[in-house]
Amino acid sequence: MTETLNTNTHTDIKTPRWFEGFLPAYLRPYAYLARLDRPIGIWLLLLPGWWGIVLASGGIFGMNLKSWSLMLFFGLGAIIMRAAGCVINDLWDRNLDKEVERTKARPLAAGTITVKQAVIFLGILLLAGLLILLTMNRLTIILGILSLPLIVAYPYMKRLTWWPQAFLGITFNFGALMGYTAVTETLSLSCVLLYLAGISWTLGYDTIYAHQDREDDALAGIKSTARLFGNDSPLWVSRFYDGCAVFLVFAVLMQGNGLWGAIVTLMACAHLLWQMTEWKPGEASSSLSIFRSNRNFGLLVLLSIAFA
Image 1 (spheres, rainbow, N blue to C red):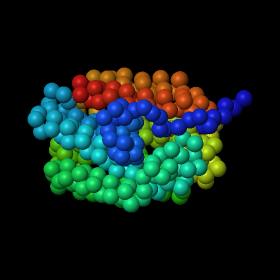
Image 2 (image 1 turned 60 degrees about the vertical axis):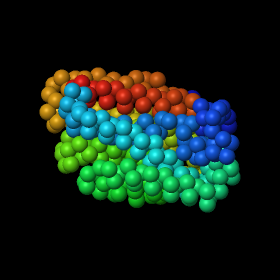
Image 3 (image 1 turned 135 degrees about the vertical axis):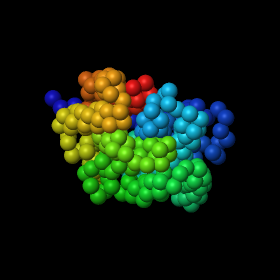
């Protein structure tokens, strides 16, 4: 028997959260709008950038003060730009979010923040992100600017194509290119392969994430790879994860890290195999749990690159 989703009690906003104790009440809706209660998105945006920095630096033992300062700046940038992306997404989706059980309590959908307030907040975030970007070299600044139209367009993709997860991968993993160029001031085959690995990874984990909303998305007319693949989703996610592993191994090899680098990278990729054995596509809680576990995979990859 095919399992079905139960979204009636499933929401992505839960209280209390860590900021409830010290944030004034009037600021809390902005924290929820920025998804500060759920930092997994920050990790998934940040980690490809850190991969790029560490790969370009030649691993942990090749990192200098510049590399470590870039790690800090990319961390701040990920917090800011993930928040900006969430605001843009919720501005696009404020009416659709009202129709999905998991998202109807989001500040714009629930009316706790007005559109005008969200736009002002977005402007502040984008200005802060620009100030960080301007500390980088010219090529990295160009890449950062090129990513902005993708960030703005992404929320519309779920209305236009069955593959919004692919567009998210293209957008979310620009950090792999930017992290590499921030160190080297040039692009290379190894960082392009790292970028492709990130896209494949995102296709996998965001398909898993989208399984939480398949029924509600169908009613609202929202497209996703979870709906497109249906019961074949585990097969497709496995293919995406296989692609991620292959691209990661070749990125490490092309950077000159040799057989040992390939071995430790494959060891990190064993986490993807674990995900596929544990994931229950018909259970929203399982999809969310496995999706969140990708932070651990990203950290394992970071360690493998650091010590390759």
